[in-house]
Image (cartoon, rainbow, N blue to C red):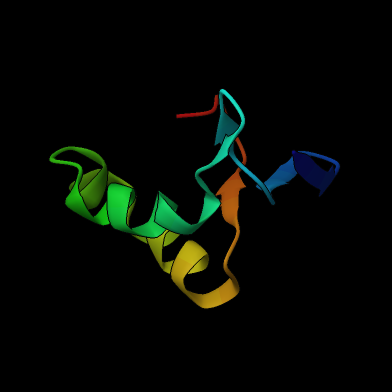
Length: 59
């Protein structure tokens, strides 16, 4: 589930096959070999606000 305005989108809930994955997003980003290096601001926003920010093609 997403919410946003203009070109800024926040993923406020993530699920797969009915299982809520939202709580595990931060840990997954932090442990990912590429995203932990290339998405530092996105990870920091998730850590601070609890929502994953997307302002381009979703990752």
